[in-house]
Length: 331
Ligand code: TRP
Image (cartoon, rainbow, N blue to C red; front, top):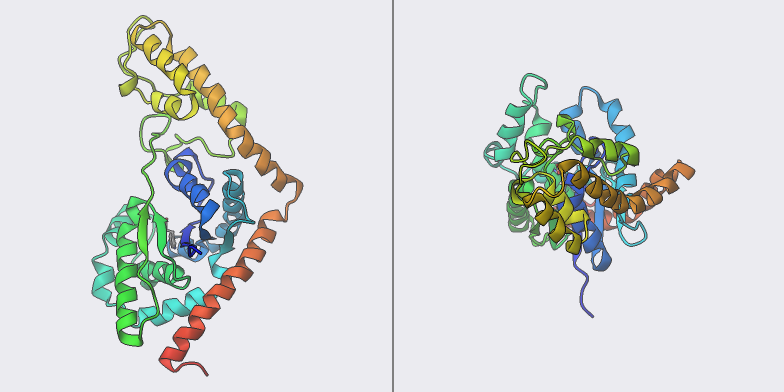
């Protein structure tokens, strides 16, 4: 029998997920969980590395992430969805791996400087915990001994560090951890409504749980091709911010006509947006149907997590038992 590939990935609970998160990351999770053994978790301790001054805020975002996942098509019966802070073994492995991780590896981690500088002035990130972000991430991963970790481009340095830490642990303490490979998720093809990167903080995102009337309103404000100053100016779909949305949501046959009508100015941007909004709404409707289950049952997200935490703990415990024996720390 073909051995099931094991997959681990996590997201920080920092707010509602939007289309930019779906295309690239969540869609690949949904695909992977059909025929892999997947552990997906809410990285609430990781959120604490930057939100430590307001830790109370994190809890509210935890069930929201589960709702977004299920709404987007992840079936909790087909994967393990859990909450990092409820599997305390992650913290123990983090402690052990911190003993063997050279500080210089962490200091030269590019995301360390980038994020610290980016948030400089708003947050003091010269903390031990923030420097150790990749050690915690490495622990999240290695404790499940996965083959692959789907991550975005920005997380690749962390995965490389995870592999180096695994090698060092294996060398010092005996073979324990397979070196997981990154499965690079595709960069999202969609820009935000204003043409910049889609981000909650820019206010240019359409969230997965967005009210459908709001979707229509937002689409009507979208930036389109700069060539179409007037209705009769022909446009160029390949230079338009809206057209990639059509490519994702509008049936291919119809897109050929849309591109033609844009290039000949037979159709204006307003009508073009209306067609796209209709198709985007069609795409989001099943998300809303699955999400409604959570409105009917307010405990559902926590129930899913409780069940997942149990399963994750079992797997995490096995690795920690093995490692404690190797360290002669099995008292
Ligand atoms: N650092 C990841 C991010 O910000 C979240 C994360 C934490 C993660 N632990 C992980 C991702 C383990 C994959 C595997 O996106």
